[in-house]
Length: 163
Image (cartoon, rainbow, N blue to C red; front, top):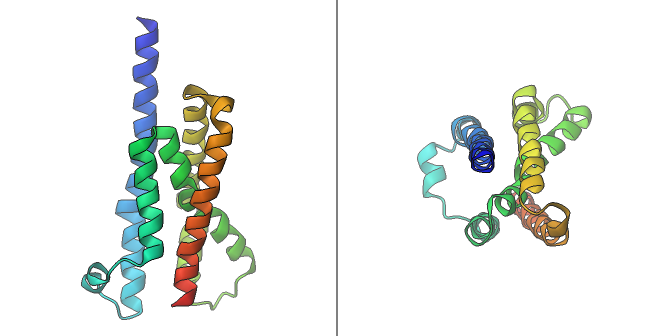
């Protein structure tokens, strides 16, 4: 039936949206971080051997819990402070940070067109999921979820600032 076809098309586009985000994280973002860390004297082996900080555990486990306890919309909302936030932050820093900052490669990567397309894709996925998965009726719960994810992402950034 048409309804089944629409549902399957929706699932396919949802999964494709997540595939683009996962590809960016696994095949591009991680490579950037590994190469960047190597410039600071940390090997990939060092990175893997480093115990996770509680702030990292809190945010990553929160995202996983949202995906397991909720649906794809909950998962996308929980990930959005990271996926979309990095692009927003980097774009602001690109306009204000000194050219000689040691973080220039990070800023340029996340402020660039390639990562901008990833962030825009994540926003489009959020819009599609909201339209199909409860829309405005779920907005209060999704807003609370987003706020909590932002708090945890803020703690993640603070962890790095604290050293």
